[in-house]
Length: 277
Ligand SMILES: C[S@@+](CC[C@H](N)C(=O)[O-])C[C@H]1O[C@@H](n2cnc3c(N)ncnc32)[C@H](O)[C@@H]1O
Image (tube, rainbow, N blue to C red; front, side):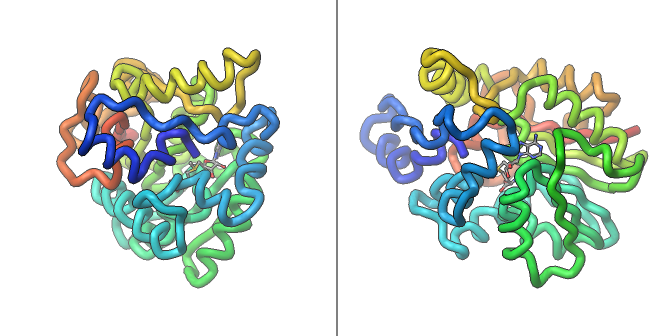
C-alpha cells in the first residue's frame, strides 16, 4: 500500500538502535508508474494475486508477509477503534469506502445490521467477496468511479474510510466527503483518516512520492498524499459536517491518542470523526 508499510521490524529495530535512523527505502512496486493511470487500474494491478493484494492493503502486519490470521488480527485492532469512535450499534447500516480485501470488514460486519463495502477495484472486491463469504449481512460492490452516486440520500448510519483518502487527489477527497454527507442520515457519523503533512512521518511519505515519481517525470494516480489538520478541518466543515472534536485526532502535529495504536503509522494519522447535523 505505502512505503512505510514495509518497515515493520526494521522500524522497531531502528527505534531500539538508532532513533534517528532514516526510513527503509519505499517498495518500488508501489511506486511503479506502469501500474496504471486510473485508481481502478492501479489498485487492480496491485491486487493481481492474494499476496500482492494483502501487501497493498496492510503492508507487512507485524513485520512479516500477511497470513489470513495476521491480516484478521491487524484489521480487528483498527476496526475496534473505528467502531468505538463511530458508536456502531447492532441496528446500524454501515458503509466502508475502499473496503479492499475486507481486512476491517470482517470484524466490523458482525457488529452491525447491514454492512456495505465498496471499492474502485473490481479485483479487490472479488477477493473480499471470497474472504467474507460466510457473513450474511455483507454486501460488496465495485464502483465505476470515485463517488457514491449509486446510493440514495440518508441510507447509512455510519460511514468510514481507512487508508483510502490518503491515496486520492484532494478534489476526489472533498467529493467523497460531500458524498458521505449526502448518504448519511441526519445524526449519522463518519470516520475520515488522512496523513499529516506536518508530522515528520507524513512529510517523509510525501517526499517518497516526490523522489520516486515526480522526479522521474510523472505522477501516479493512487500515490500517497498528505493534508494538514487545518485542511482536514476545512474539508469536513466545507462538506457540511460538524466535527466531533472529542472523538477526533486533529492536533497540528503530534496526536494524543486515547487508545493503543495498532501500528506506528498511526503516529502520522489525522482522524476526523464528524456528524451530519
Ligand atoms: C490501502 S487499501 C485499504 C483497504 C481497507 N480500507 C483496509 O484498511 O484494509 C485502499 C483501498 O482503497 C481502494 N480505493 C482506492 N481508490 C479508491 C477510490 N477512488 N474509491 C474507492 N476505493 C478506492 C483501493 O482499491 C484499496 O482497496
